[in-house]
Image 1 (tube, rainbow, N blue to C red):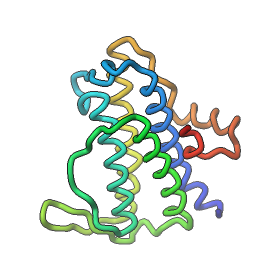
Image 2 (image 1 turned 45 degrees about the horizontal axis):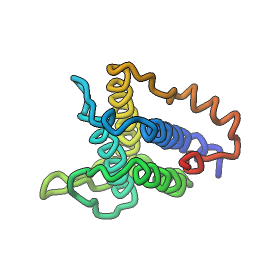
Image 3 (image 1 turned 30 degrees about the vertical axis):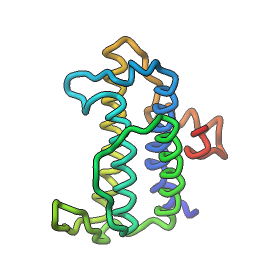
Image 4 (image 1 turned 60 degrees about the vertical axis):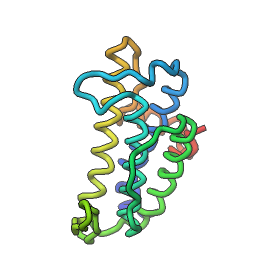
Length: 173
């Protein structure tokens, strides 16, 4: 992996690590806690986590140039979401080495039509979307007096120092 691909992949590795860490944290909560929500958030913790992983899978399909599957994000289990996110972590490593050109056009579905957008826009959305919905889950947890895990960039950096050879996918289980 070149230095430029290493710099490109780091936000995606943090994204995967943070999602897996949050999913693992939620796995230890009582089932009723997963049905909680708060004003201004996406929905329940269950709905938000299913949407977070499902949307990232669809965005990866766009980057790959594969037709995007449609349908609702259905919560299966936290273990399933953890496994799917671990697969996404490995997938981003493959998709971003070598780094793709950000100006490459990719198709995104808009109803029955498709629209061309810059690949860089899709990649930015992956990271922004993950941050947004992890924040929603942490807001719900905090609203109910549950301290969420540290999942910011500094916590990721601390994790990297102790797991230098690690990858977010290996953090999954």
